Image 1 (cartoon, protein in one colour):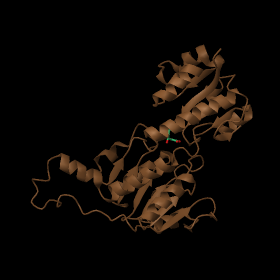
Image 2: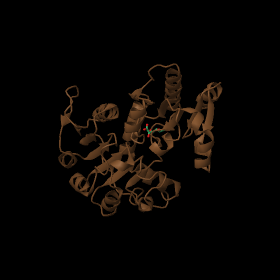
Image 3: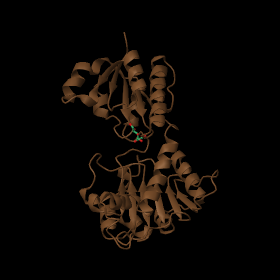
Image 4: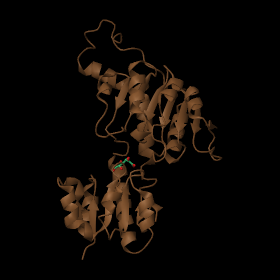
Length: 318
Ligand code: 8YV
């Protein structure tokens, strides 16, 4: 009999979906309207969970899966999984560690360039047919901020932080960072205090894990970043106090923001829609064909290892 899998978020790669369906009985929890009834019906037979980084899985759901052996996160963040609980029960948790680093860093740079150079505003200007109407073509759009050479501050010098640093350094940007401690193996300036890092940066890029850092970026940090400063978030919405960010953007206390993640996805603070100094993305940093294929293959490998009684690929905790 095929092992039963509970799937909490969609997989967009057809070949991965096909393989999952071939090897396992896949219960698509995310498609159900009455999720409680679905769990009552299938929970007892479920041996594995596939979920997204942002979706994770709650303790309440896992409590209804008595045979659960493995949670395979199709993503790198495990902040939405109750790891203390999985550890207690000996459930293995895997993440697609390393698979999406380059894409997330690419998007951070894309957001930096798009925000500083006003790419989306200028795109809207051209699409609206406003260019030919204006006698001095660029007058309705303010001059942009040069990105090359900007002082970039990175919050979290993990895999993604490092990949952002390499890219920004290629643009001639001096790099500083903060983390729990200085890293001996990177050539960038460590600044332990986040407010001080913000003060010494023209752009702050969030690349930190979110489990212990809710609301890290608040009014104080934004104030230190200042009216010429930009905030980029490719990590988790929860790292930012969104009310403080919206206020800072509206009042011009910071220059702009490029955001791929939000506190209550897919809901975005409506005030942001009207602001030209923000570039918004629907949590798409890892959403390329190549990366999602690699991630899906890691998920398949994890499940296979777990059901063969082995250590999963990309083990986070067991
Ligand atoms: C993933 C994410 O794309 O990796 C993560 O933690 O949040 C996203 O980048 C998501 O998990 C896809 O399911």
